[in-house]
Length: 122
Image (cartoon, rainbow, N blue to C red; front, side, top):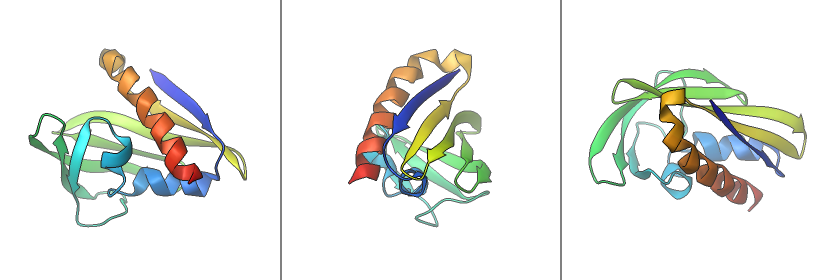
């Protein structure tokens, strides 16, 4: 299942928001805080996120292609993929890939996509 949102900002600006762990609590409705060895993620990075319910769970970045895609495991379970489809130098489509079983999470992803768009445009 995919959720997509076209953003009027450069793909690099959107990508920078997506991979900046300091920004995750700002745009991610389900993330309260992040512990990561690096501010900007890359393949293999491990850390933990604090959920809105207050508990900490580990994460690992499992796939990473610069300006294209990253995905992760959260608590050892494959989670959302984050994909950019570059439309031109000032526009891109942000796509969240998620398992069909995570259908209720689609509403959270829609909200996150709008927030990412606002952050990338500022």
